[in-house]
Image (cartoon, rainbow, N blue to C red; front, side, top):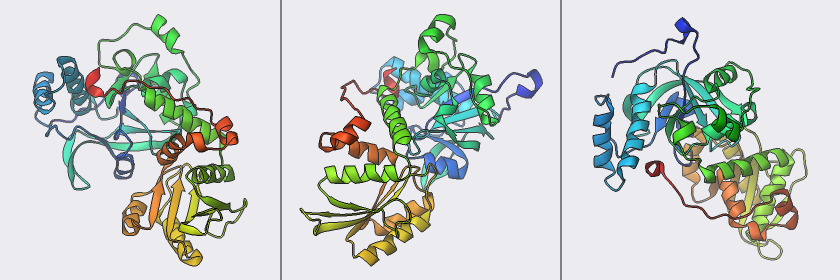
Length: 363
């Protein structure tokens, strides 16, 4: 499939903006950012290099997903076409990060589609130069955030002058505009292209989780984040001792079972509230601290996630150390919400809502 280049420099038009996720739970985000790629799922779909038209893509989708209806097949074919055919070199890619809540990675497509081996598995990829891999969500207007919350793996974001506004952010600025969804629907005609704004259903679950992430990030900074982790451990039945603010000697929380914390498993917990992924030196420090305190197990909690080197080395300590990303902490909060202290519940007020779970094929 030949590479194409977006001609924004010749006509002064801004480059198209594409939403391209990296796994339902963000499982491919670290790989994407560290290897300079956009990586999407669709593992059941083979190489798309020689499938440049929508009809041949539709045949692939119908074979791979026979359980879907025709609308679902067309939806998936459109997303694959967007990723493998319509994206051009120079286009902007937006990746809302699930492993680093509150951040959106922005980059530019730097080459053609390639079906290649990534971490030992054949994957659909586009090379991307990640120019701003950690843009705060607060740098975007609310209407753009709604578009980036579309329940799709790949789609174009275009309405409300999104291309000009995102171009400003990727250049180092902030989006000063914000159009409410109600105003947007009243003032903007839908395009005929496959875009987030008029075809995609809002991912209600992800949007709700984003709100929880935003609440935690704004209310629990630095040592307060450690207090939140301690509250979750108490809700799970641990007796805890939290280090005071300041140097902690390599451990933020000590935890044990039983009324006095003398029963096992005995935990050493290290907590990192940083927005960036922590490296392997933090894991090694925790393992050394576990030996010093004669702990049975360790827990490393990082709001900004972990580097690939840390994740690889953590496999060697699988039976002794657990890693919690932001999503794991939110899961633990939701799982134990009824047992959390009244103070924490007041700081993170939640209400359970049941809704139908959709996937890409339900559009």
